[in-house]
Length: 117
Length: 113
Image 1 (cartoon, rainbow over the protein chains, first blue to last red):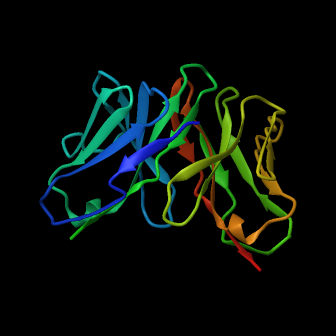
Image 2 (cartoon, chains in turn green, yellow):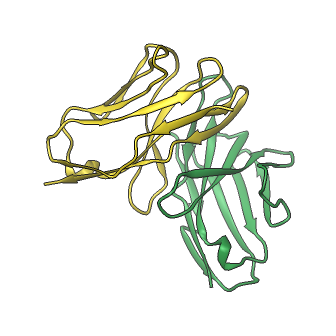
């Protein structure tokens, strides 16, 4: 199997607080994980690529100081939304890449719904 | 970079009807192609994939054939069920050498009993 978990599944926080979201590959090692953001009834947009043991690579327009990513082990990546504001409310989905070859597949977590009041 | 275009939804069908969701892509080379499904309130699940031209991916009665001549990867199912109601995303790697995926806009399927 290839299972990816996320925690928490949903979180409500006050504006100005920070929220940490965990992404774990449960039965495989993932040297690369990805963080996506999905707005209601829209597609997924890549935020950043998280590589184990190195700094994340952020997509254009994504504030790296606001969305802190840490990939401390081969099975865990975390996304911290710092000083969250209502416009950060969204569905955050991580994926983990299984394999190192050219035909490897990404497996997605169940997502974390963040609501900032 | 690579891109993908999906037919817009929602697609509403009666149970046991035939389903086609169109997907066309623009890509450098011949990357792997994917269909993902998202049930309400959940993350994405890999439905099927094809790794080279003329490959047919299949799973749970769904099929899609990698057609390089028409740069298409249409999703089909011969007889849909109410439980197939979900949003379907066509996807491929963002660019050569990049493993992150770029997704189509998603097609919502509603199957009525």
